[in-house]
Image 1 (cartoon, one colour):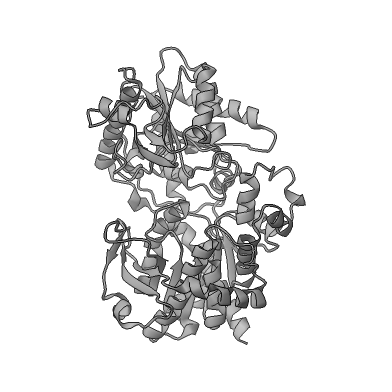
Image 2 (cartoon, helix red, strand yellow):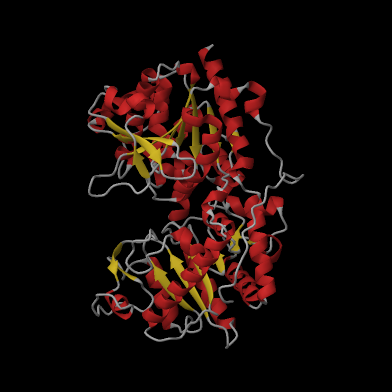
Length: 578
């Protein structure tokens, strides 16, 4: 189980009979010739806060190859000189010096540059200025035209609308500045947070084609987050009724209006397409599964060094946290990661499965389970810093926390870990909770997430609600076998295209329902134990299979679904104009 040497397989996989490639609509209708500007707007452009960042940043390279400098990403300018974006490289000459030459209303300002990712696409960062002051007027128009109910808004609704409306204004201004006819523009908006921008674009640029992508419906996520059974009663849910019950009227009505108004509505998986049909009363015209960019995975020599260094760091942190030299390079390392949604992301099931696994571990097997999930972090553990040889202080931090939290008494992960420890269920397999962003500057690991992935032996992502599932996909892309479930779009894609098992394709897929929690826990623990007991040859086979599976999810295969969406949007726009 030590840091074996692995070869990274760069495979160009032809689609087989189980991988039906969408007919390239771009070829059929000469799409690329019709489009002079393709805009994609999202809160997560140059702003790494969730899974959509992974979608956009890995998709960009293939889109850039198609559209070249006709591709423009638009994101929020939430940065300052004291806190600059690590992903944005400003370049004022982009788009004919649009930032300096365009005159924008409402105090809106922009910066232009490149996104520091493979493909280096053009980016506009938008500061909405005083747009928020004009939202009441915008809300009135949206109610009249689309029935969007903004009266019940709260939280991030206003901020999201201000940004997306400002982005729509920028799209129109850049189109005019570049002397491009509006009929040659496609504007793609991601998630409900940019829905107001799509609607604003529809009536301010009626000749532009619009695409709306939901990565998870706001009401579906809310149903699950509130502990309600989504699956057993799925066909009985009414989206409007649940929005009123859960105080989600504004977000839900905005998302629903954008989905119905867009020239093409898409989502990321068949799982979510069914959810949209049930809760938004519309089925997406295209399912656009999420791919991965192979250039994110380092070549063999660097990969093996990252694996070796990452394991050394994880083991050093574990020994320092426990204040004893218990673990070595033969330790089996399991992990989960993602958004801090205790039930939705399956953190509850992960912990209980790990506890069950610990009961079954052979006595001579050492294993660790890491939870890389950002929470309300306060600071690195002072005691851990001291044990690592840094400046710190004895702050009596729990021996499972790498960073102190502002809410340790109520954080659901902490609460469950304490319960399991008090029951003696984590004695054989210790759990380490790292509630920080692994951005290489967290103060403890100081290694980025993608650089630490190769160090892992197995990942487990048993989400209850997961429209796609980028974390298990990233895992296999980095050669780490994973256990996920059939409620994740990625898990369903694996079921549709492979015979799911760790040895066959690097992915085991379990069933999740509203009533099989305990059996799912036992199955996960059983599959993990079986894999732990594999010899070196078996584990190497599983890692090899993981690389091959990831190769079939390359964006160069999946981008055709976007071409189809663009084609549908252009044709629907033409119908509207007529």
